[in-house]
Image (tube, rainbow, N blue to C red; front, side, top):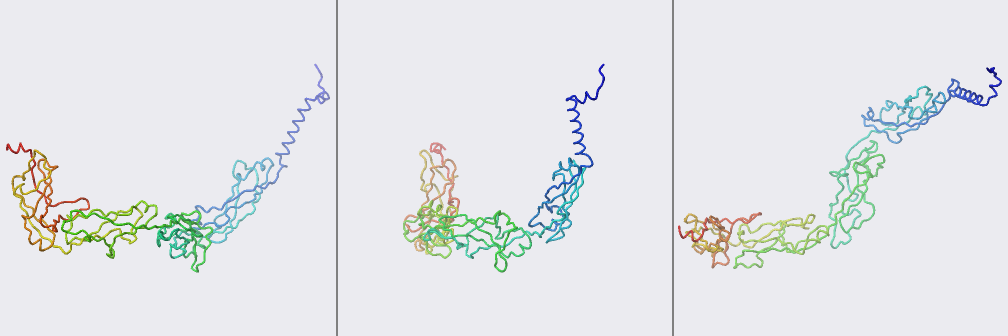
Length: 463
């Protein structure tokens, strides 16, 4: 058995390496974690002044200007602890009770520990107070005006003033920004209390050939007609203080008005029989000037058809009536009226009423009766047509009797029992016509009808 020798042990390299390592770790631990290793460190952090859910917010106060501040927090502790800290381990709270109203307030800052490290000391925070500017916040509506009282002259002109023009006061503003002629502005009361009006200002000159959307500035003015700086304010609906402005450019086009006369008595001259009038002032119309976008006007021909004027539905007492103009959207007459007054020159004529007794189908002129079919009055009984209105010269009307009338029915589509409309003429009196009543906007309804049976001729012969 070998005898233990310290001298031999100290001269062994491996043993000395291990021993030295243990001693070094022990010394490092004592230096790093020992009570004699207390140090200080400054941590930089930020604090935001937020009035949400505070009495200041309830009083409509808001921070204007700087609301986020940089502070330095001095902490003390062992090196291993304080150099493990970050700003997230510190909670900095402003004392918002220091804000009592609008103006300048000095808000105290309080700092506390948060996070997993607690074995250290917070020595100080710098600055310990911050200066905060607050304003009472308002939200109100203000009238909007144009920089030029005549909207059409707002730095805008047309490319061709011979066929184009700007309708006065027809400019419209984006309703997301301007509603009911007013704009909503949020901001500090010291600014908004000065606002008297807000004007639409269009910068530069604009020559337009068609309806265009331009961007205009909204500028606030005080009662002294001086512009107000709206920095710090918000125009609701506009992120940049601008508004979209639609400037309509209107072109003109002149068209002829046409119509078609039907069922006119052969004895009446059609020249000058119908006059077209402006319903507003009753001035004659032969042409109509239309106003609208040039692109839309280009789709309209050189004439506008007013449809048919049917003498079946005209008598002296209703010889003036209006027709609505059917125009594309956005197109309107320059006169401002979307109707045309039609005057038929028959007011010098008179009316007369007759009744006619139909004893059998032999009293009728029947057209269109299919071969092999016969027609009879329903039930074989006579039928009376009343209130047959004749129109014409009073001398001619005085001579006409019921037997002068010719009654025509069309049975081309009839089978079995039918009630055909009766068309009535007065041969020998070319300037006399029959009035059938008011013309419906939906269809033409003839008032005189007969009850007729249309049956097979062979079957009728065996009965």
